[in-house]
Length: 367
Picture 1 (cartoon, helix red, strand yellow):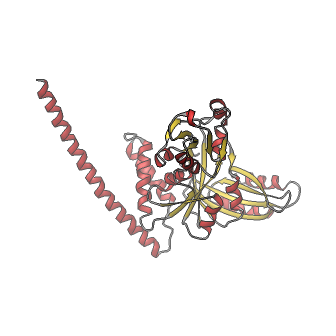
Picture 2 (cartoon, helix red, strand yellow; picture 1 turned 180 degrees about the horizontal axis):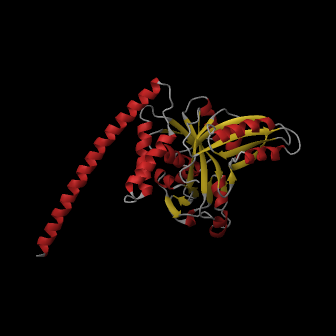
Picture 3 (cartoon, helix red, strand yellow; picture 1 turned 30 degrees about the vertical axis):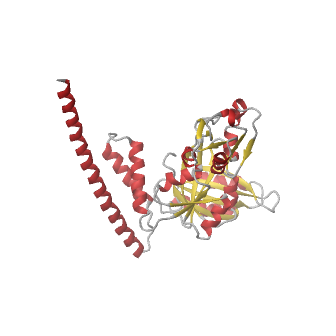
């Protein structure tokens, strides 16, 4: 009797699996059709010299899919699946080359994959400034750079590079950061030095002080470099990403050693041209103010009077000009929006320097 029941169950499972196989085959056929249609749209846009990336259209697609889903398929997974599909179809005309702070498996690399999916070609670059240079010279299509961390604040090398290179901001992505202590053996007793980028070292300083007192830290260019060092030296521990563990075949000593949970880094995508309006955008400016009392207050009043929400303002000293500063501003809205356009026109009247860095869709998990 039991044998018969097992046989029936096995037959039922095989029956269901055949249905799943049929669905999978149908999905593949539909994906092939989708990419063909996307390529056809791309060809028409090329003839009309229109931008291939339409952020408003993509937002509408996600909204329609989520409405049709009615919470039956897990929403984060649905978004992730269709992000990969949509990005792959959009990039099928020409695979972009995306430069990131290398080597492989840094958090910047992870942010790039989160934004562009796996369809892009990724090129590791040694420094943030070099990423700007590669994009400005057209050697890579896009670059992805960290701009601020929710705990440690602004990444000054990124802000300073905007003052030096002519690029546009094309997008942003927020990446939740979880730091792992890794080494060759997985044993904390083997670690004689802890290497990482200066920001992860700062974000884990209390944990390191408590659990590895007296062990020196070594700041390096990136978490990927630290992981490479750990892969070569059994006495080096690295604070690195989950991707680095797999890439460099390291063992986890302790996961999640950051001092504060909710640690998030904001990354910017830079390129030659900002995208069209999506309806949920940010606009970034780099400005210098006229040298007279109260000018900063005037600038802020102009934006407030227009009802413009200022999301961020950060000052940076101008190299070679003592006590002179430029201001980075992030505003909610797109330069195509009437209020932003008018507010920026009025703002220029109190500026000694004014540069529009770009308007771009907000990160999915913001606002």
